[in-house]
Image (cartoon, rainbow, N blue to C red):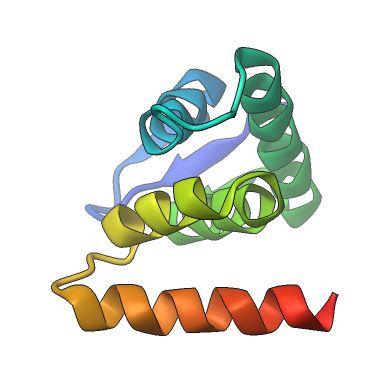
Length: 107
């Protein structure tokens, strides 16, 4: 069954695992994250989105990536979050890092 992503513009396109992998790879540059890790994360994102249904929003895709990336590499998580959430300054990084630290402490 195809998985369709509704983009910000309202346009619909088929989910592309390679796009997820490319975004994660960019966020993971120079980090101890291997190609196998990225492939598994991308597959996990797709699998979690399929449980939502045949159509998902770009927001759901981004949040699914962040959820999986959090446990893989915190620096890559912050890098991805900075683009996905549109950070505008250091305060945004501090806020997100604080949330990440609290979530890690709860585990």
